[in-house]
Length: 138
Image (cartoon, rainbow, N blue to C red):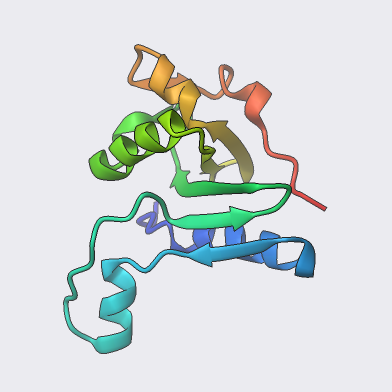
């Protein structure tokens, strides 16, 4: 099984939104990997609240994750600082979603961060996430 870098899922995520033209706007937040890609050197950037900011019927923060796990989405895939920022964004009345790309089935899920925040478990099974399957916007 090839290593999951997450980059193909991020590219697909951007493509989904870009197909909507002027009715949607997606902005990739600069991260250390992008700085390294541009300069060829390890770059330091501030921690970002999410991978993307999306405007489509409102504005929300979007964290994109991909997984090859057959049984569940494991919260260990979520980084500590963006997760802490997600809690602050929700407390301030903002919207924050985790977009999960389940690679073995090529399914996408759009999960409000509040669902993750409010569970006491360390993962959610695909059955538990069934109600959060993402129908691509059109």
